[in-house]
Image (cartoon, rainbow, N blue to C red; front, side, top):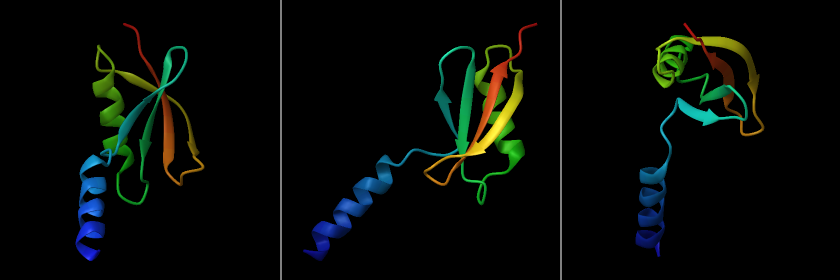
Length: 79
């Protein structure tokens, strides 16, 4: 039984989404979900910039979700 539980935990860990993570929203904004205790704001900004085709994301807002993770909302800058 312990072996089965350990196998299940390893499988769940392998499927875990790496943070920071892009979360698409309606319209022209998107969120970057992250753990504020682990990731820095610079890492989150870099993830947002890499999401935009021109490499420039503009910060809109920030909030903490019901899941305990922080969400920073961005909009890709148009040049």
